[in-house]
Image (tube, rainbow, N blue to C red):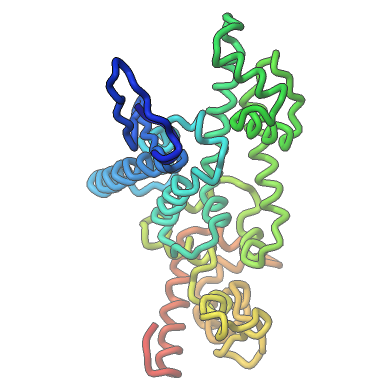
Amino acid sequence: MFTFGSKAACQAFVFNNDEVERVESYKYLGFEFRATKNLAHGVSQLVSAAKQATHSMNRRCALLPISDPELRCKLFHSLVLPILSYASEVWGVDEKIGDAAELLHRQFLKHILGVRDSTANVIVLAELGRFPLCFHWWQQILRYHNCINNLHDDERLIKCAFVEGMHDPAHLFCSHKVHNWLQGQSVDLSVEDDLDVSTVIGNAKNHYAQTWHQSNLSSVARYQPLQPEYVLAPYLSAAKGFKSRKLISRFRCGCHGLHVDTGRLLLLAQQVPREQRHCVFCASGSEKDEHHFVFDCPAYCAIRNRFTNIFWGPAPTLSSCFTLHDPIARFLRECFEHRNTLVAAQTGHNL
């Protein structure tokens, strides 16, 4: 016998004068429940299995080889996401339970981009045009809602509980969560009608993208001119070679090692205020950010003169420069190599 809660809180169950053994865990249809834990335990088992599937997929991609980020994201969607989404119709209503699954998703995306683990999650998702997994889970939940709603037998227990929960959200935890989420998406909820799942999820994703465009985070504000649309960045499919693609990804995502990046990674007591992260290679007093590095710093003037095609036009911008994928990769590589030489000359240590 399996019940939720501690043994002390559960009375003994006797059948034919024999006490039925009470177990601490029970696996039902592949999902494991624990007596003293919530559904997060079962999700942790799914994440462990998904990690193995991800490692196997990465090894296979390395052997073939498959390095295209778009294709690898499609493989993740086909091979790993079904594991992470198993039974999400039940546990997906509580997005905190799925945090471990979302963490694995973000780690995979950062791995194929070649960026640091500390890179802003919203930037990594936007670079690949991906959305958090919770949108997929809600899609599964709403499809399950329609499936239950279409049951013909109105006296079936699961439909009775679901309908009662939707009419009285405080009555049932799962229905309460679904009710609140749909209200947050401005959905005109009617238990008797099927939901247009594709439209609801599409609107939710559009709202997420609009919120991202309106973000006040400084890192996102610096990144948005490089990624005006919430789609897969074109260079990821066009740039030749993983090293060139990784170099562009790290620069665009803000983990390039410039002072505007490293100043925030120090211990709290040693962090340099953003307005004081000046360039140490020129006397302009300008902030050492991506725009200054590419366009203004005189330390890289000779390199710019060799890449005039990147800066062609009356008013070149970072966004226009990154449309030339291979030249900008070579330009960045030479600039960072020269920067390492300058740093070594100043400090006696190579980066």
